Length: 321
Image (tube, rainbow, N blue to C red):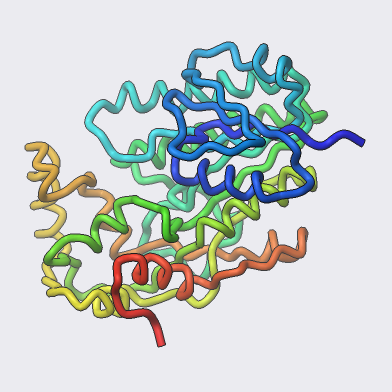
């Protein structure tokens, strides 16, 4: 039986690189393919790289030429920006283009990386959220809206193409020694500003566990939606305290207003997020990840506290006791 041939879309991104390392170290994978609009910072002997715009390239021909059997779609514009039309085109049109290629090439397994943000940040969330929780994206966050629309595309594709196993993952904030996102950059600031009167639990998942979960879902041909999040979430105040930095508590409404002002004036030195993301510091969704554990027997190597520790240790900050 031939080895599965996996294509990573968005291989030059941080999660794409984590998955590439996982595949390169897997003896069951003799060759895999990475695709992105920019070359990856790391290369592997078993990886063939193709430079392509995923939203417009003829991926079906590429999949066929490389004899691809499984596709992991990790390509998405994540960082908030002011060009919402361009972001929407890349994210949603990109997903549509990928799905057309998956159909034309007869791909066995397709995985789409969504996000916990599809649940939104709402004060009425109660307890860890299962995958059956209705999606309620925040209307002011393009990333969340696009993820929900892309998920709907994937769900419709599955109903029309039962021959392809479609899986969707919804990871919480991904952290680890190589991840660089707005959480890690927030902790880099000399003064940490947080909403006064809110101390929610925060949930994290390690980049290695996300890569392992993607590989397990693809190679096992599992279909459906799967939350990814470590157990033992951490209060926001504990993470802030462990940085050893000054923490300034500001009323939520004032923080949202100043963030709105800085965002619209494009003062990136003050903020890189639109004001609706402030609600994720007040009402972050916590997910129930028991489905992937029960159906796949998947075991997370890092709980939530251990995952955030890897980020804090990378910054030479105090680790949890």
